[in-house]
Image (cartoon, helix red, strand yellow):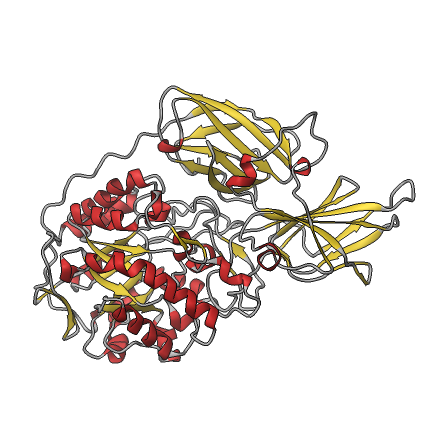
Amino acid sequence: MHRRDFLRLTALTPLAALSSHIVAGTMARDVTIDRQPDGKPHRFDLSAQHFLLDGKPFQIRSGEMHPIRIPAEYWRHRIRMAKAMGLNTIAVYLMWNALESEPGVFDLKTGRRDFVRFIELCQQEGMWVYLRPGPYVCAEWDFGGLPPYLLRQPDICVRTWSNPHYAQAVGRYLDAIAPAIAPLMAKRGGPILMMQIENEYASFGHDLSYLEQLRTMWRERGIDGPFSISDGLAQIQKQRTYLPGAALGLDGDTDFAAAQAIAGEAPVWVGEGYPGWLTHWGDKDFQRGDYVDTLRRLLEQGRSFNLYVVHGGTNFGFGAGANASNDYSKFEPVITSYDYGAPIDERGEATPDYHRFRKLLAAHASPLPAIPTAPAAIRFAAIVPAAYASLWDNLPAPKTVKRPQANELLFAQDHGMVLYRRTIPSAAAALTLDGVRDYATVFHDGHYVDYVSRVQHARLRPGNRVDLPATDDGEASQLDILVDSFGHVGYGQAMADRKGIVGGIRLGNEAVEDWNVYSLPLDERFIRRLKPLLGEPSRQGIFFKAVLKLDRLGDSYIDMSGWAKGYLWVNGQLLGRYWNLGPQQRLYCPASWFRHGDNELLIFDLHMTVAAPMHGATTLHG
């Protein structure tokens, strides 16, 4: 069983099975919860199995949210929502790959990347911070937060110091962010109480020196803790990767007595408690959780906890990650929404769980602030886009390769698509595509034939074989294989999940070599340079465009249920992926990405040649 699945089952286990675990190792009841960051230095210690703030026991009541998944103009609102629910701390992941796009090219300041501003807003709103900067975070984010440029190295191994490319990149990352983090630590007047070393390492490896070296590297850069680790209890017991002296966060577990036997005098807490769960493409419905009884018992025992997540947000752009078995099979890409069934939904509204949790938390806290009003939401009537551009009219110069190669190795391309093209004999033949990552559409002399999907699902055709027809005139024909990608796997051992075609291509039993390969990254530069259609589209691979007129702005969910599979941009901003496989059929667009008057909606669909209507709704699902 994948540990991700195991954690979900643990999180949803009836309380009766957990109660004996929670009672064991009960915390003192005279804990402090109301002291807030005030710009003055504070001492936060791990001592006698407690968290101590200025020498007094302190209960962390944390809820997780990730600034990269939230429009920056809504940061303060989401923080206030967490505070009004009764929390005193915000847990924050930093996604390394959102901060360093290319080796040495960092952006810590623009838009949703400005994590310093987010942490400062937490302090302004009277909230402490539990910082989780990686380098690996998982988070169902692309490549677990690691930069995909690492996959351009053929021999890369991640999460180990034995690989010099990885070690050098981690050092560069810490060099970039440590100077920004250090002044924000509580001992220097900031709101950061504690910082996590890596994430869920026991679910990947067993080299304790890896964690020890990471802690040393932070200390060398002026950050001396306190530190924590977070993982499944069974994994830590098996791998023996508890970092001595660190707080031990349990992910999806409440057996505090067993964990305390490992942590000694360091505190044990719920590093990740799951009020909801992630959703993959092809799931029957959006995942939900039930954490009320577990939260009630944690509060009764004075236990510290972190709700993962209190607010999920959105995997904008190419941010959504994926899961797979350690042999790269059973590939499961994450949907664009990261609603997660969280107490605060994707666009910032309080859910029924929010009110249930708030009632519990209010019974163990001073009077709570009023719940902030949710941002305005708008609907808009159905509009029908028009065909705008053909992918086939916008191909760049190709590279010639003998055999297929991964996108990262061939083009240094992290996301988007590639096209494989060559001429083949005219006779009918069976085309076999090995190692498609992750979805290929096949064309024969410009005519769509079929698709191959790495995702296995009852509603998708199985296998990797496509039967090609013979040409009528007996002449050689053109074979096109267009390969789209999902996010890189970000959990477990399948951490070299390169994209494109990573195996061979065969016609019958013969390997096919000597290909022209075209890089189609779907990045801003590629989209900006699209040449419009000169006539009617004749084959799949069309960009469609619509103009949406708005006289009032608000958040909206753009309903794509009439479309097949592709990408949606609003005024140049990539909302993310859609797929009629579901369950997600609507993509969230924040109000700030719209504008008064004309708005440009651009759609690329892998299968549609005729546009379908699209409309605006106010909820993720009907």
